[in-house]
Image (cartoon, rainbow, N blue to C red; front, side, top):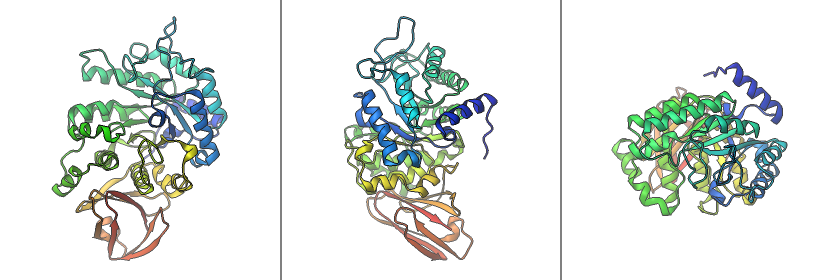
Length: 422
C-alpha cells in the first residue's frame, strides 16, 4: 500500500530529512528512546543527553533508533505570563530548544510529551484550550514528534468530547508538520473493552491522522497485576486460547502476550505512516528484570506487528547480547517492512501470524501462550506455502533447516519465535 502525502507534509518531511540526513521516520514505525520507564518523573537534561549519546556510541542510532522522546515532567508547574508552556529550569537549565538542538546535532530526532487534557499524569500543565498556542511553541522549538497523553480532563467530560479534543489537537499538529503519537484507544479499551464501539471509533479516529497510537495499557509492574486482571483487554477467542490467556499471571506474560492478543486483530488500521503502538521495549530495564529470552520474545512480537521500537532502559548499561538483539538487521527489517502481520492459524496454545518478509518469503511469528513448551505441527499449505518444501531460518540463532510437507516447531513456554520461511 502506498501513502500519498499532501504538499505541506512533503515539504515538512523534506526539510526534516535535510536537517537530520535521514528519511521521515513517521512513514515507518518509529525507533528510538523514551525516558519514562527508566526514570519516571525523575528526568533531567543531563539524563536525556546521556541516553542520546549512548544511542550513538553503541551503534543503535546507526541501526535506526534515532528518535529521543522526553516524557512527562519536563515542564514547569505553571505556564508563562503570556500563556505559553515552559520548562522546569531546575532540571532543564538550558531549556528545551537548546536540548532539541543538541539532539539534532547528533543526527537524531527530538520528541516531547504533552497531554490533551487539563493536566498531565503528574499534574503539570496540559494542553486543553491551548492547542494552537502549544503547537506553535513545539514548532518553534523544532520538536519532531509529540507524544499526546490523556490523563486529566474536566469532570463529566464525555468520551465523545475527549475524542473531539484529540482530533482537534491532532489536526493542529499535523498542519504544523509535526508527527504525533497518542493514547485515545487506551481509555476506550480500559473503560469499555476491546469489543466496544468506543474502542473501534478510537482506532478509526487515531489511524486517520496519528503516526502511532497506543492500543494497550501502560507497561505494568507486578504491583499493578490485580488491576490488569480486572480489565477487559482480550476479546473472546477459541476456548483453548482464552484458557491460556486466563492463566497468564506474571508481569512479562501479562504485558507481552496479552498485548499481542489485543493487537493481532488490528492490522487493518496499520499502514505506512500510521501504526498500532504496543508501548516501549523494556529489555535490560532494571525496574523489570526480564531475561534475555523474554526480551527477545518482546522484540519478535513488536517487529512482526510493526509496533514502534522505542527503548525505555539504560542504554549505556545494555549487555553486548541485548545490543546485538536490538541491532538484528532481519528483525529491524521485519518491523520496518511497511505492514503489520495477520493471524494465519492456531494450534493448541500456539498462535501463528505472518506477513511478507522484506528479504523474501514469509516472516512467521509463533506465540506460545502456555506455561509449557508446545509443538506447532501443521502442513506447509496451512501456512500458505504451496511448494513441497520450505527453508526455515530462526532470525535470532541463524539456525537453518528444511521442512518437507509438514512444518514442525517447538515453541518454548510463554514465548515467541520469529522465523523466516522461504
